[in-house]
Structure formats: C-alpha cells, structure tokens
Image: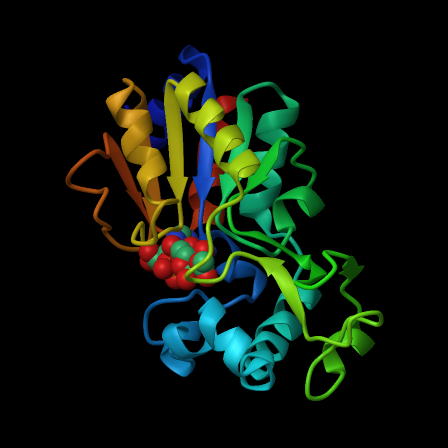
Length: 245
Ligand code: OAD
C-alpha cells in the first residue's frame, strides 16, 4: 500500500485528528518561512527584531521588520494545503488546527476550530490601555510606527514576541486538543520554538500517532514521527485527501 493511502486509512480509523502547522504551510502562499536561507531570520536577527525588550527599547527599528513582514502576509491568500485541511474539518476527519502562524490563512480557507498559538497579525495592541486596533494598510504604513490614539505610545502587533508568554487561555485550549488527539499531522514546522514545539511530544507521550509533512527532516522525524512524508504540504495533503474520498 502506498504511504498516502496508508495515512488516509489511518485518518479514517482514528477518532481525533489534530493538525499542528508552521510557516512551511504558508510558503506556497508566498510567505517566507523564518529559518533557512530564504527565511525572515536570515534578514533580521530575531533577538534584535522580534524580542519584546527590543520592541520596548526601539519600536521604530522593530516596526521596519513588522512592516516588511506584514505587507506580504496581509496580501497572501490560502493555498491548497490550507484548503484541504478546511475540507477535512468540514467532512469530520479533522477536529482542530493548532498553528504557530499569525497569517490567519487557515480561517480564510474555511477552518473553524483554529488555535493561534502565537497570535494573529490582524490586530494591533496598545500596551498602555489594552485597546486593539484592526490592522489596515494606512496604519502599518505610519512612520515611524502607528500609535495608540489615546495613549500616544507605539502599537504592538497582537502576536507573541520572543520573551513573552503564550496567553494562558490559548495554551489551555491547545493542550485540551492535544490531550484529546489520537492522531496528529505535523506540517511545515522546524519544531524548534518552545513551548509550541512541545505539543507533538505531548501528543506522542499520550499515545497519538504522528504523521509529519515537511521538505526536510526535523527533530521530530527520528524521535516521535511514525510516518514521514517528504515534500510540499499542498501536494502531499492533496494526495492524502484524494485517497480519503
Ligand atoms: P520555520 O521557518 O522554522 O520552519 C519552516 C519549516 O517548514 C521548515 O522545516 C521547512 O523545511 C518547512 N517547509 C518549507 N516549505 C514547505 C512546504 N512547501 N511544505 C512543507 N514544509 C515546508 O517555521 P516554524 O517552525 O513555523 O515564532 O517557526 C516556528 C516559530 O519560529 C514561528 O511561529 C515564529 C518563529 O520565530 C515567533 O516569532 C514567536
């Protein structure tokens, strides 16, 4: 039996499938990943540009990176991989998507139960009064940075920076899904950023089967992955989906 068919059979036989996704699933939507030669962190040092302390010290500098990243992210559209996951949820095969991505593309593709572990780029937050402003092109283009109209301090994207904690409610929801899951699809993540990277290990310890889809091996591949499908997320998910129907 080919591997796609095998995974499709497993999807049908297991009760609670959860997908855990990373930047790799959005690469085919034109959003660069973080690591690797084409990654955002090869252009911007994350310690300097994505740490909360850096934002508080020099928001104008950090906003240059945010503007660069958000311009691409806000124009991106869901690709086949996002759409297949949405369709799998609609047909009852997939229960939840836990994503490290902030691009909102799972929801745009139609996924309903999405847990955004690192937040969402659709909102800007005032660290003074807590008010949120919806992201608009004119707002992110404001130099040196958009400010809270009331407090006059720089707005921060409502995403998790290095040095910040994952909101408790988000962590709780993710851990509830992980404890329920008996089968996890790990798609397009290098699996190196914690605490997110811990989730597949927790699933495995609780007895879940792990299927990994990636262009390259990761720390999961030789430790917890049961089936490794090497290649682009859109092609592999489409193949699996064809065998499901
Ligand atoms: P990375 O950039 O670290 O890893 C992307 C992964 O996707 C790599 O393992 C690639 O091999 C794989 N990949 C690339 N294109 C693919 C494709 N078309 N199909 C399948 N796989 C593909 O991104 P993440 O693991 O998501 O956090 O990074 C985790 C966190 O690091 C991000 O959420 C962000 C970042 O710093 C914060 O900023 C808090």
